[in-house]
Amino acid sequence: MDNYYSSPQLFLQLVKRNTDAVGTVRCNRKSLPSDFKTATLRKNERIARYYNKLMALKWHDKKYVHMLSTYHKNDTTIIQKHQIQIEKPTCIHEYNDTMGRVDMTDQLTAAYSIPRKRLKKYYKKIFMVLLDFAILNSYQLYKIKTQETSNTVMTQLQFHIGLVRSLLEQNLDDNIPGHLVKRGRPSNEPTPARLISRHFPAFIPSTENKQNPTRRCYVCSHTQNQINRTRHESRFECTNCNVALCVDPHFRIYHTVLNF
Image (tube, rainbow, N blue to C red; front, top):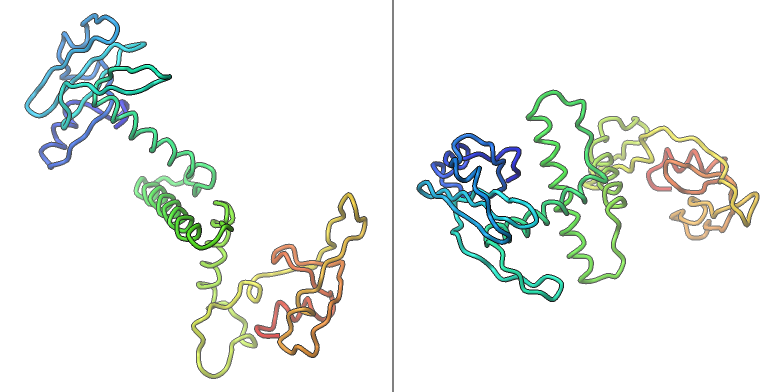
């Protein structure tokens, strides 16, 4: 727990609810022992004070460190740092180790976190934070599973885009125009977003090597009738779908026909 939140009163309340806690604490918090606040210590010296299960510890490292813990004792751990063995209070060592993982989680979620600055209700902000963690956890599980069978793993950004696209395709079925609804037995497959959103043709941007670049038309090369499959280069693309298409008629076909 960070020192912004921690206090002896909070830790004692958590103990009553069968929840242990450890964290840094500000030395001016109420209910801390008076000598705990004012004691002068030499380098690597420490003192500890107890109240029932709660321990308050003060340690002098490069500066004073104040800790509260409900499941540690006043013992130490030997750690290796720059090929030198250092004795450090166990509660501080375990706290730093755990907080390092929290910082890594914050770093991974910060890049693609769901905006919540404009949310006024606290419970909505909490929901968005939990949703960020759920997406991050699902990405980590995806990486673990994919690396077992493949060397190609999506980046975190690609995973987010794929997740958004999948959610859109599964939840926009109610907005499908009537002429796109398939007859007969209902399909379990979601309707592609290319059939629902608005799309406009655009020239493929020029590159250093090509002033008027072209790409293979997607419909020409993917039509279900193999006899009609051709390789046709087009200067136009749909920027939303990131596919090259002949302007007429394949741009219209790609965005209005489910199976072409």
